Amino acid sequence: MLKMKVFPSFLPWLWLTIVATFSITTLATTSITRPGCESRCGNINIPYPFGIGLDGACSLDNPYIIDCRASFEPPKPFLVSNNNNLEIIDISITGQMRIRNFLATRCYEQGEVVASQSNTTAVINLNPLPLVFSDTANKFTVIGCDDLAVTADGEGHVSGCIATCTTLVDVLNYDNSCSGIGCCQTAIPKGLTIIATALNSLNNHTNVSDFNSCSAAFLAEESKFTFNAADIANQTALVDRTMDSVPVVLDWFVGANETCHQAQQRPSRSGYACQDNTNCTDFDGGSTSGYRCNCLPGYQGNPYLSPGCTDISITGQMRIRNILATRCYQQGEVVASKSNTAALIDLNPLPLVFSDTANKFTVIGCDDLAVTGDNESHISGCIATCTTLEDVHDYNNSCSGIGCCQTAIPKGLTIIATALTSLNNHTNVSDFNLCSAAFLAEESKFTFNAADLANQTALVDRTMDSVPVVLEWFVGVNETCHQARQTSSRSGYACQDNTNCTDFDGGSISGYRCDCLPGYQGNPYLSPGCTEATLSAQSYEYEEIVSYHKQRTLLLVRKYQT
Image (cartoon, rainbow, N blue to C red):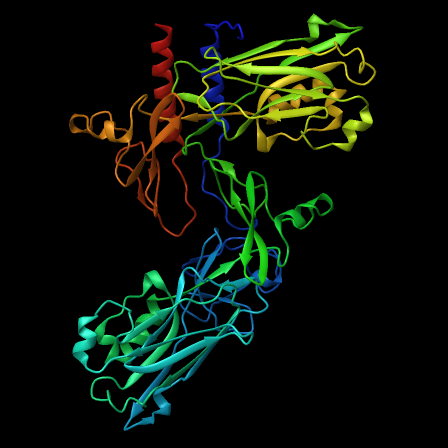
């Protein structure tokens, strides 16, 4: 078992590190556009990679150009496509866009179509834009009592349904239900880029003309449309309501016909859209492919916009400056002045654990073994070896055991005690690797470089400056959400209004966290709680967040010192 000593001087160091971490964290309003570009067209936010301006200077590429038409009051944004009348209602940075709806309509009088009140076909063509109709958010919808409609894309992908009824009483019995009586809905295939809707009648409404003379068919965001029996009798109101408040949802992506892996393999990653602190996810659009970028957990911002996403801390993670175990050799002997063969980080008794998902235990060297653990026999370790420098160059940027190894750590650690040693005192690799290092590292922030083997000073400086250790913080030590809520008058329960409480699983350590409800923003721990978010870029109150965590941490430090 590892022998370790808890240094009383550690907590003041951790406190200063925490304060420094909060001091440099940016929590200001997040930019959503390129510098110098308009972020809004009228009342609608236009986040990059989309951009306002037909010259394309504010967008990622031509397909992402937005035409902001000032002829409207307020101005309205439109897609530049085969359909120049595709009006944008909303663009989400997570990959969805909503556009104003189009309906196919058909009215009858004495069994004949009334042309002036009918638009029997409706076409929305997204080509060649990086957009597809969402097959999960939309439903193809038909309103009527004697009607059949189909929608197709010209590639053999067809959806359709039939809406019927015999009396108005039938419809009233199924009010608010789109189950075939007066209203039907059906799914659409994945990856459609064209929706061509054709609407027809089974019997020209001759049997239902006394209460239903018109019908309609359209694609609709399912969650935004509720059938009303009045829709059968009042087509004008149905059309107006659908146009105003029932959009069509589109899924957008970048890197048309390119996966994350393909985009990342480009020289210097040129053209790769995802910026720092982001995840890349392949977009599955059926026959259409691409990828999307998202901020890493604990980060916020526009993942497509340089420099990338920034740490928001309020989600439950904290980053502290790193501490490394190092060991240098000369003629088979340890050079004590250049070595720190053990490194300790002790979080007790703070409400913190080392993140087992964001960190990896890392060893750099060609003849080296290191282990890390706590005083509860939770131990991780790995071995890094190589025989020649050429071996390492073959595995440059890869931490796979040749010059660099990485391994996971157990969940819920509150102490990391690292011990570093050598297999053969570097006697066989001394001509190109005299020193080694071991440390815990945020995996996404560390990339092994063959030069790390020859230049320990540069490795240590780089790791200390830009490769932090990620901690998970929580409230309510050894208390679940349920237990905290059961206290008298909820005294001590940390989650404020408009929040969710989530139990924190820290292995042998438990607690809980608070998050704003969907559609709300702010600090969920501060009274009065989270407030309803607007479509503008979300921001957090920097001073409040810093104050909250400083107060809680300082109390715990004082408790420990006494």
